[in-house]
Amino acid sequence: MVILDNHISQPGWCCSDNDGNGFFGDKHLNPNLWIRGLKKMASMFANVSSNVVAMSLRNELRGPKQNIKDWYKYMQEGAEAVHSVNQNILVIVSGLNYATDLSFLKDRPFEVSFRRKLVFEIHWYGFWSSWKGENLNKICRRETENIMRMSGFLLEKGFPLFVSEFGIDQRGSNVNDNRFLSCFLALAADLDIDWAIWTVAGSYYLRGKTIGSDESYGVLDWNWSSIRNSTILQMISAIQSPFQGPGIMETHPKKIIFHPSTGLCIVRKSLFQLKLGSCDKPESWRVSSHRVLSLACRRTNLLLKSL
Image (cartoon, rainbow, N blue to C red):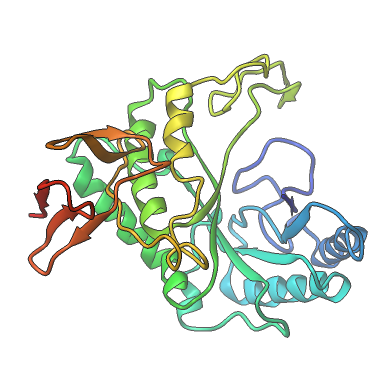
């Protein structure tokens, strides 16, 4: 599947508050030209067989000119422009402050003429916060509550929410990123949220003025020939398959225990022992009214109590 992303107007590395690409009315973001571009790209994939399933209206709106009034005006116009020339693709809408803030949608709806094809997106990176110096559970709870306050509430209102960018230093030595990943995996598994990782690319032909620069967040290595970190890839792969949704809970209803620090699930080692193992075929657990977990299999007496 392919998502078209209106990433940046002026070719270059994204992003900063003052790069002229941040918000409508900036030097390189003329709203009228932007809408023309959206319609042009959307029309190219209308009424043809393709893997293009969605269009993201604009990447990481930001900078001193950003404001809620103009956000509604232009993002609603952009959404309608895409829909007017292509009724088949999803329309993905990002918020303010580098795609982290959609909180204003609590007070005012996003009004468009179409239904059932509107998706909201957020970005989430570990380097935006400190994940060290405290108990990880406390940090994760605080950061998760912030995500739910800024954007996650949309899920409770029935809107699709897509983490269109997250990523970590794939070298494995960044403690801040490693701790962030555990929290991200926990929330992503709990909400069964869709996501896209930054980035597959292991290096760049040209980044800024540097030729052949390495991408430490790349899933691939510098040569694009091998996986940079197979352990991290295994952890992320645990949330690739859906846990909820149509056809899943009806045909295979089960509760699983996911261990976000490893990306593994709790499975049976033997009749009386448990271990961490693949989430591809996880154990099914029951939860009693006293918060006691028991394996759905009747041939075992394994019990866990939630404290």
